[in-house]
Image (cartoon, rainbow, N blue to C red; front, side, top):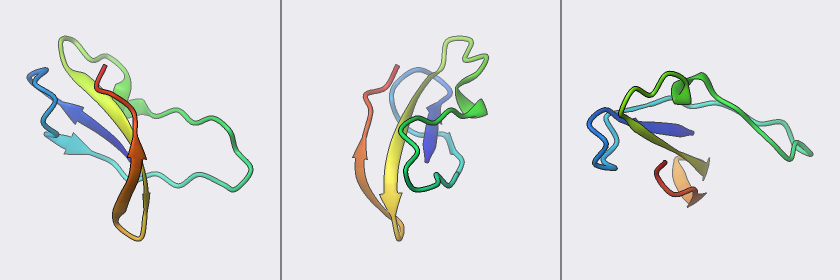
Length: 57
């Protein structure tokens, strides 16, 4: 689940839920494109609970 912060503060202003097939060791998302001063991060979630995530970048 990618999240994006519109003002760069690392507070989620938008997110999108995307699935990943088992066995896949990479993923990409369109929410991180054309950030223009914004930051984004990725979260791994299961049943609505965040399990782990990347730093904001």
